[in-house]
Amino acid sequence: MGTMDDATVADSLAPGREGRATAPASARDQIRACALELFAERGVAGTSVRDIAACAGTSPANVLHHYGSKEGLRAEVDAEVAALFDVAAAAPPEEIAAAMAADQGSGSFAELLLTQVPPDSPVPAYVRRLLLDGGDAGRHLFRGWFQAARTMQEGLVSTGAARQPADPDARAAFLLVNDLAMILLREHVADAIGTDPLTPEGAARWTVDALDVYHHGAFHVPARPTETDPTPASSLPHPPSPTTKEHA
Amino acid sequence: MGTMDDATVADSLAPGREGRATAPASARDQIRACALELFAERGVAGTSVRDIAACAGTSPANVLHHYGSKEGLRAEVDAEVAALFDVAAAAPPEEIAAAMAADQGSGSFAELLLTQVPPDSPVPAYVRRLLLDGGDAGRHLFRGWFQAARTMQEGLVSTGAARQPADPDARAAFLLVNDLAMILLREHVADAIGTDPLTPEGAARWTVDALDVYHHGAFHVPARPTETDPTPASSLPHPPSPTTKEHA
DNA sequence: TTGCCGACTGAACGAACGTTCAGTACCGTC
DNA sequence: GACGGTACTGAACGTTCGTTCAGTCGGCAA
Image (cartoon, rainbow over all chains, first blue to last red; front, side, top):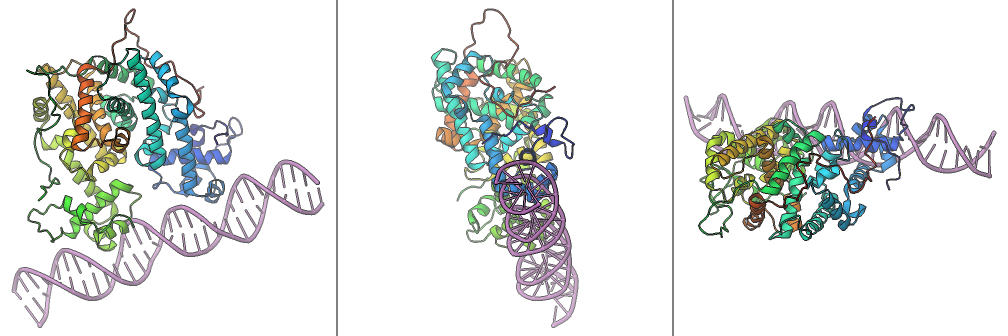
């Protein structure tokens, strides 16, 4: 499928440029790049075919000419982004586990992948949408990631690099979603700590603290009389919620 | 089409305390409850005023009569959900810190709040949208959470319950987004581990593993020959990305 | 040259959109 | 009874949506 050349999103962002000098990206690729960016920014429902056509410097009819329908265009953009991060298809999980075990300094999974896209790329935002409401595509993407994380964890445990988890599925999912949270809440994190965690500097700062927690923990284990403390969450600080209703 | 004329949504959010079994909430509240559910499910742009009216069993004109415009309705739903979780307004951060320090068994923040909404509530999904593309409302929400998490962390550190972080902002943000990830990726987590983490059973299972990591860490600290290795991510498993472009 | 085919366009289609408006039904108060 | 106000509606408004279509342009093979 992705047999086209490497027209980047940054190229397509410039409307009406005389691209003959450097990158004569085909109109078809321009359209897809614009769709990727606009879908990521405003959502699929919030982006019209006319918007995409205007961004790509062509006519709305030409968008449909190349992709059949808006949904067809969306499907192709989905496939493009998913293929980018479909680690299950790109490499067998054992290979990923070995690679990340070698680079064990960074336990981050999503970060590892996202270092491959430029900081201003719309791909992270699109992945966000994909995970949020991209039904099958998002589900398949997450499943692949989870499987890879699961395999990677087994590898780390077997080499003694990771502690044996009591619930391997739960721990793998926990570590995975922690990584993905950085993508999903990227701008909020940047706003809170003052550094975009998807830039090299931000990633470094983030990783230092994440690894500190993952190596040494964040909380001291409370000095309980006995060890067993199975009840996780029962006492609430205050019950203000007006929408919580007592079931009669 | 879809889910409509369903009384459960209105019931779960009806503010009428004296509500009789058959006496429905006011049409105005019905409309807002339906908007909350549909916005959460399909997004604001993907939901029409006619959809909301059909769900609430009224006319589209009546929706506008009560809320002025679709944007006005959206703003009011935003405010309703935001007020639910605006911990900064509900209680001073010190109070929250003290409360969560007392309930230190559950270090989870979002989970603590979400235990107060029924499992089938559309509120978590709406919070998801709010954090993702609810501009000011989402930003304000996150900032309040971050501030509370920051204060709470200081409290835990001062009492010796938490390890002193090297970068307090980064660690507070790290722990916060880890909690929020469970909301954002709820259904993916449920799909992966087989249990919805926003049900009591799922939360228990999730918390056990999260606390295990937060107390004892996930990885063993590697036996380094010498000291620090600040480069976070340099060796990549494979460089396949076609959209990655070398910057000149 | 002729013929063909893919790229591409302007104009239009019907449907759905948010919104407006005149008007009806029902209320509690003179 | 008359009255004013709120809740509510059906029918439309103008706009924008995704999509269709007849047709032009340019390159390439015969």
